[in-house]
Image (cartoon, rainbow, N blue to C red; front, side):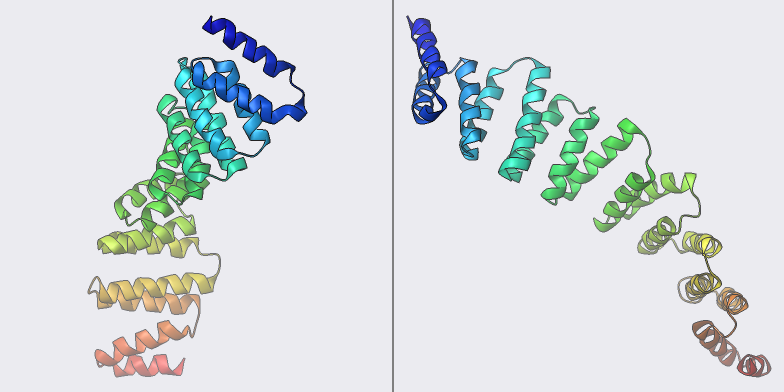
Length: 276
């Protein structure tokens, strides 16, 4: 008798014109209360509430439909559809986050799932989850320079200098003189106090510079590193002189070199620098 009543109610709903949406909604809600295991009325009600932009109710119904599905492929499809709807139509990022993580539990090796997670977690500014999705995409699709760089930048921003260095090294393996990557690597090494390695990176940045002026500026940084962090005034002097070879009269290099010569009481050499 119960099944016959459910079938009859479904038939009545099917015969109602579009103008009778309120009556259709009432009958469908009755079906859900009395026969919660039936999917057809649930799917019809989702469509009806979606057309009316009742997104809160749509979200509730989507969860009920997801609970009825048992096939993993179908559950994945439902989770992806629900996530996209909540993100793009409803603007409910918390609900979208719930659904994308449901999809991730079902298919963590799917690039489509990880790209959707990336969209959602960018919207929620959830950096750890953004990093998870990016790193998984690298694992699935292989190294991409832009993706590797973004992972490194986010790790640096999160204060994970060691992790940032690991990703930068992967990027620099294919492009050893990428200036942006080298600049980030130098900052990370500075944070960790690995100053000898910083000197090597600054040498690479100088070699990669696209002008004499840019090279001179980096070499001056190298001079400061030798002078302060490495306690190597001879190395600092050599760097400042190299910077002046790149750009004669470079203000910072000239000033630093004059100071070193003054402190060393090398007045004849100082006079020569002052004449330049």
